[in-house]
Image (cartoon, rainbow, N blue to C red; front, side):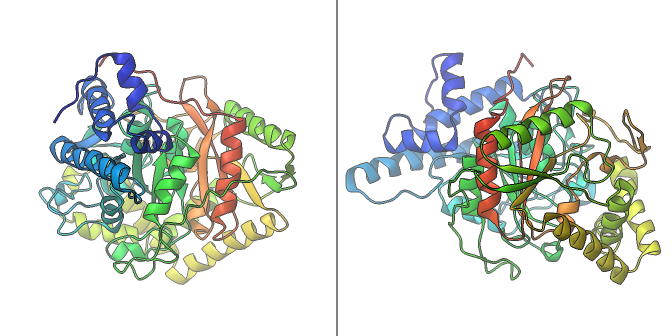
Length: 490
């Protein structure tokens, strides 16, 4: 069944509803899940383009199965209306899933020529939970090769562009998810984060991305044991992201490192009156762009006006030290795993992938695994000291306003203040993968002069998810995000 949408205004109105709004209207039988799906499909067909043009947010679309899922959801809402009972928490909502979140029988290539033709034998735990919750999975989102870059392009999938400024990247590695949300192609999206791969795209696309404490969201495969990593939710609002987090989170038999209850929404409400919130604009010496500083301070002033006590925080960090720390870790875990997975296909790999494996291997020659644990502990201890007596901390999501959509940045990154030897030094996310028990949310803080959104991170104490979401919701209310991007013709 296909429902015809009568006008572009109708498409935008229906397709851009928040998850919370859509669920309320589904329950009231005011609209059907099919209507939202068809509105978003029309928007995708009009604006997504392909690997050479447009936004290019998807590796593949799953329209036929999505229509069947949406139709079944509509029928279920009718039954609930007549017979009573509770509908599953995501019933009828569209969710675009990152390609690395495997779906049984579909491709699981991670953008790598070495993986070309591989398929998933089982659903990723996140996908399993989405299906159980009644979600409509209508598309799978792009990432860089093996999710190892902060831009999203690859020889396999082409260039993914930022809907706010198509010359710019939506960030990475969950760039397709951020782009799809900002463009109004989906209601919710899945992501993952090992050094900022959820929060960087959220910051650059004006969306919300959540890095949960390690193990809170179950993973798949041996790299799920990497304590830097974590899968997570993205949405266009804090409430939508919290809803998806409640579905994704909790102990799962496929990941023995996962923990906590499933179905717990971390957004419990509350204001910021009397909260002591730390503010670190530079996290030590990050060369934060002037407009990002200004937007970060705007958020801090708004929180103060709402009754929070904002406390300046000093951290003894340098971008070089943080990069050395994370690559010492990668040198003993992710780097060797990538090298093994891609052996013999180096000529077909993106330059950033070759560079990542090389940098990780070099760091492993400088530092043993025990050394890297000591380096991790030092950063964690310094963060704990800085946050003592505080309820949470704020800092920007990235130090730079944007990256080029097709950028490789093999020679580092130039900022107004100085040249950065590694482009990862332009992002302020990876310290909180080192301190990976802290929940961290990126929410919008404004727009940069090139039209690309800016973001701010709310960092809470280990495992204190409710505090992170409480402050994020207040920030969103006080400093509303930019909404969705206005799309031109492809």
